[in-house]
Length: 390
Image 1 (cartoon, rainbow, N blue to C red):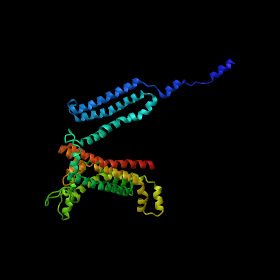
Image 2: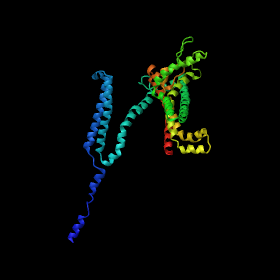
Image 3: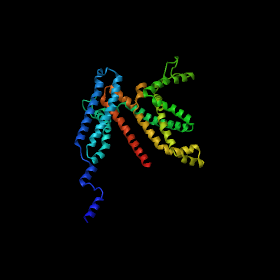
Image 4: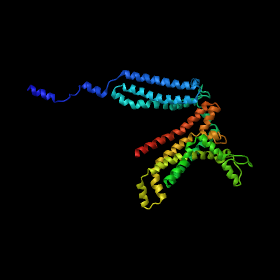
């Protein structure tokens, strides 16, 4: 009987670990040493990188006053410092119990990004709102005086009207041109489509200042009787007309319309690429079904293709609209807001840096923020609705 019992115990196999060992395997135990090493490593890395960049700014002589050397060192320190920081962050997290560490990892790795957003976006936003209730040098509170000053200014209301015209015209025309180019280019051969799209997209590689300089050659004005170097005035004079100072004509906001053309030229390629991608994503069988039912190409487009690319059109429209609200470079380089061509961003810049009126400049930015927020909310809701419908 004893022999049978012994044999039975021999063939039971490995026994289950005690409950305490099983709990430790699943949940782990805290390792304070790793937590400490990770925390100290993160602090030292952040301190070293921050002080190195301060040294680049305040003591360039330490680096032979070489911009190239400082740029290379900044690149190495920026990338290398980020890698080392996240390495120590991972060590710190691994020092916590396994169950807590697994839930903490996603938030910990997102924390640096959210911290930068808070430092460079949220904090300045709150500070700007606070400064909008202060005097010109932000040393004393003035209540709503800054808002009374800007809203009682005729120039501010003229600027708002210009912004309204930019919002009304530029996004709609940009999306319309982008849609037209995307549809027409889709009818070409692959080589022709690539060539056409490359030409339309090319202006996206040009900065706003560069674009303003290029279009200065189109709108350039010389006195009557002189040779016209501007393309538009050269055409006008060739047809027997008189040259016009296009940037100075504020009748019917013609100068603002001339500036809008530049932004439309820049952004049409952006709209075309996104819309073209959406059109190519339309299922071919739905298009063929419409054609088999006898629908014309125009009807197929408006009743089958257009409804399916509408979410993309709205996304592009909102993106360009937000860009329009912030437009500054084109105005600053071309007219600097003269001749009733000012916009909110340029007015803010002039109030802050030329007139040295930080309070009114902050109030202008708050007005711009109020205009942008509803658009952002609508964009977020539209995106969520698109995701829900997929």
